[in-house]
Image 1 (cartoon, rainbow, N blue to C red):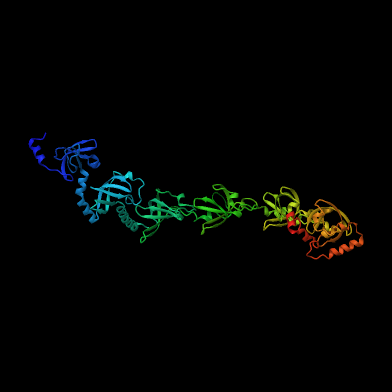
Image 2 (cartoon, rainbow, N blue to C red):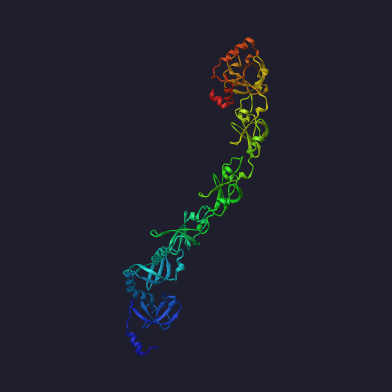
Length: 559
C-alpha cells in the first residue's frame, strides 16, 4: 500500500506518450509483463518483446516506452522493444558509419527475408542470408548471429543487414590462406556443391575446386551424376593451382593406379576375356573388362557370315559376354575386341567344302531384282544371278522361276573367300539346249506352243525344251495388225513355222502366218526378217526380252 505521501508524489509526476521511463516488473501474467512506472495504473508489455535467454523477473528494473497512456479501459500500453529501439539509434548510426558488425537474433520470417532484432528491428533480405540462399527461412528463426549493416535510413528508421557479406569476407580470407598452403598431389576433403555436364564443383571449406568429368574415373562415364551427388563428401587429389584466378583443379581417379599402365601384359592379343556391355553405339559395343578399362567390339567383328548394321541386333546393354582381344593401344587407351573370333570362320573351309562345279542344295532365303540368295548352311549363302537361272529364257526377275522358301539345287560357279561370296547357278545343272539347237529345231519346221508374253512388237511363244520363240507383229497375220493383244492372248495355243535361228544371239524367229507357206514363201519371209534394222525389237531377241512384261497401263500409254 502506498502511503499518502507516496501517492501525493506520484500524482505530481507527469507522463506523456512516446516518453521513455523506468519501471519495475511486478508480475508476469500469461503473455504479458506487468510493469509499475509510478503512474496510477500499471502498464502492460508483451512478453515476446524480450529475448528467450533474457526474460524479465519480478523486481527487475527495465526501461519502457509509453505507447498509450490510458486506453478506454484505463490501461497503460508500454513497449520495452521500442524503448530499446529508440535508445539504440545513436549506437546503430555510429556502427553504420564505421562499417562495423553487429550481433542480433532472427525474430521472424517475412516475405522476401527475415526480421532481425539488433536492439531495433532490421531487415535481412533472403539473398543476403548466405552464399547459397536457404530454402527454409523459418528454420533460422530464433538463431543468434552476426550481421553487417549495409543500409541505414534514420528518417524512416529503416536498417538493412547482410550476413552473406560477412561469410564471403571470411571465405575470401580462407581462400587466400588455402591457396598458399595447397600443393599439387595433396589429398583434401571437400563437399560436392554443384554438378554440371562437364564436371562437379567441390567446396573446399570456402574455396571452390573443379572436378572435371575426365578426372572422375579411368573409365568412360556419360555424366558426372553417375559418380557424385550434391552434398556428398569426397577425398580429392589436388591436380593444379592457379592463385591469380583462384582456381583449383581436382581429381578423383588419381587416388587409384591407372589401370592402363600394365594393360598390354594383362590383355595380350589373342586372349579370351569376359566383360559387360556398357554402351551400344552405331558402330559397335563398348565392353567393360574391369573398372576403368573398356574394349570396343566393332560391328564388323560380331559375325563371320551375317552383315549386322548395328550391334543392338546381337547384343544388349548390361549383357555379360565373351570376346577375344584383337589389339591394344596403351597410348590411346583403346582395346579392340571380337566376338566372331570365338567361332571357326566358315569361309576358311568354303573353297574346299563348296568346290567349283560341285552340286549344292538349300532354301531360297531372299529374292532381289538381280538374283536369289540361297542358304547353304547357317550364315552362309550362295547367290544365283538372274542370268544363271535359265539357258534359254530371258528372266527379268527371279520370281518368274523360283519363290522365297523354295528348296532348290544348284551348281557352285565361284568361291570368293576375300569378299565372302559364293556364286551358284541353276541352269548349269542341265545341258545348254543351244549346243544342240540344230538337232532340235530347223528353219521351216512347224512347231506348236503357248503364248507366254505379249509386247508392243510381238508375242513370245513357249516351245519345247524350255525355249522361247518370237513372233514379230508383222508375222502374225497377212492382214495388218495394229495391236498384238487384239489377235493373241496369253496361254493361247498357236501353230507357227520356224523362219530364223540365230545361234550366236540365241534367238528363234517364228511366223504364224507362214504356217501354211511353201518353201518359196518361207524364204521370202526370212529375207524380210533379216532386213529388219537393229533398232527394231526383233533383230536381237536379247533386246526384245528387255521389253517384256509391259503392263496394260504401260501398253495403253505407249498406244
